[in-house]
Amino acid sequence: MSSYERLAALDASFLHMERLEYPMHVGAVSVFEGAPFFDSDGHFRLAEVRDLVESRLALIPRYHKRLMFVQFDQGRPVWIDDDHFDIGYHVRLTALPKPGSWEQLVALTQTIEEQLLDRERPLWELWFVEGLADCKVALIQKTHHALVDGVSGVDVATMLLDMSPEHLPVEPPGWIPEPAPTASQLLVETLRERVTEPAEIMRTVRRAMRGPRVAASRAKRLARSLSTFVERDAVAPRTSLNTSLTGRHRRLATARVSLDDVKRIRRTYGGTVNDVVLSGVSGALARLLQSRGEDIGGMSLRALCPVSVRDDSERNTLGNKVSAMFITLPIGIADPAERLDAIHTNTKYLKEREQAVGADFLLGLTTYAAPTLMNLAARVVHRQPFINLVVTNVPGPQTPLYLMGARMLEAFPIVPLTRNLSVVVGILSYDGVLYFGLYGDRDACSDIEALATALDDSFAEMLEQAEEFGT
Image 1 (cartoon, one colour):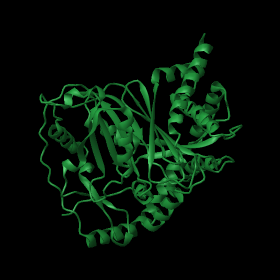
Image 2 (image 1 turned 180 degrees about the vertical axis):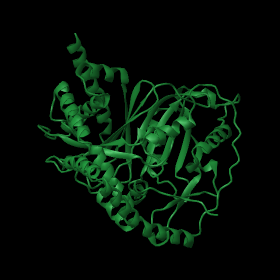
Image 3 (image 1 turned 90 degrees about the vertical axis):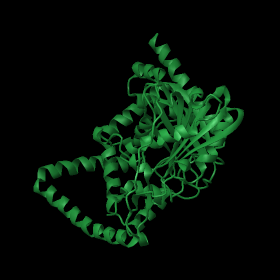
Image 4 (image 1 turned 135 degrees about the vertical axis):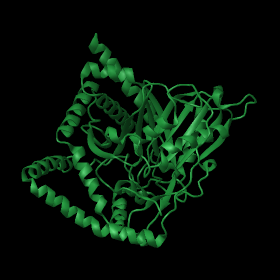
């Protein structure tokens, strides 16, 4: 008997959006203590690393699966077991010339992240990098957005990593792939599903009509949420952050901000940790655009901020369980305290009107869209006028994590670009630090290092003002 799992509509949308110029995988570059990775002769313990990773795949079985597409594009693809699974393909070792510098690691990361994942195999890769200065080891990760969202990606990393440095050699469990359906069988079953889905919609409507008061309340809640998408500032201002010329090549810059500093700012001025982070990012974007000679007087940018709708019962599950909020970043406000207050007011308003609920509803409609319509919609996303950039802030564990007994020292996320965005801001909090991964188009954002410097300056200014206010 064949076995498969159909992609959710949102997961499939990332496949439709992908082009050679716009890989749709999420990534990260992490740095570890190096000594535990090497044997007494100084050789990297690659076989043991592969055994460890393979032993954890029993906890995340989709990492054994590859895509199978429906004939004639008649339905969403499905996940099937890869009967030619090769751990050696997915867990690789490369090296920098000793002593490898941070700049060389960033350049290598850019090259690896620019390449599409092979759709004939499970959609993930781990690249270990030796040769770094101070005997450190780096890990470059690539996982397709169809497989994970930001939050589930952190859950997966927690499975691969340990909470303590204690490490015992492991023997990978046996794994037998389940048979895949034939192409004709999958087509027939897909068409059968498509016939039944409209009936399921009607059943949902009938259930809602049985409780008119409940239906009216829900409709009012949804209307209030959706109204936030058509307000006067729904269309983003045109700046150099948006371009139709995004190419194949990328630049990566990184920054680090103390989580304690962010919390101190929050305690002084109120709001949430995320409000403070968005205010710091706004100050940095203001500095970047001013350095490009752009007038930012009174300007507010629009940022798409993914919001997890994954509940506790869905932790450690894969796929995308995300909605979104469209947040106004008032870069034209120079005073850090005033800027933070404006952002807090905006995010509070959007939360009260449950904008994420409306976005989740709109995304949910894609479940019933034909694949050809999904493909057209994906093209529209590459030309959307509603946002200037994506800012995604994922909370990670605040205690050290280990791999093969080696402590993970830092980890910088990498978020994919679409055609009309020249930069995205990925943020991961880990062990008391906010790690910023700034990922941009090589040509349209050649000054991305200036954005990293601007982030440092923006948060430093906020902290200095908070300390002065506190005294």
